[in-house]
Image 1 (tube, rainbow, N blue to C red):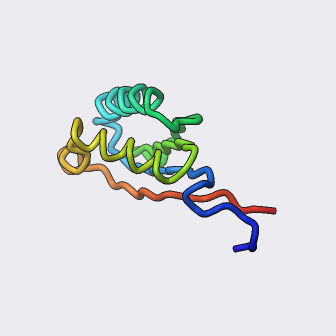
Image 2: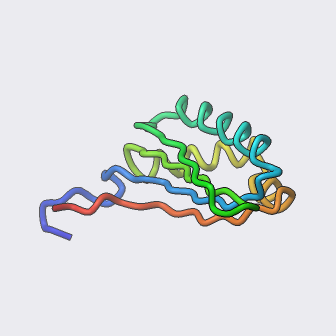
Length: 109
């Protein structure tokens, strides 16, 4: 890190979630994901979001959820609040969804 760069907690942060799901559960999962994003938009520190989909095969579809936060603290606070409202692991297990979730920082140029 450069000497005068802001602390990591002061930098914008991107949460990117990738889901692979059976076509049969697409409607249910997409509806839930839209509701989650509507709630995220109301949280302090929210900057922007994007939902993407891509057919993967005859049996599955990929969905990518991208949310930009002002900083790590805002992302973590929103996650903690939503975890009280939604049992994400239960939904993913029940619908047989594969997920890959991570927080990313923009690369400085």
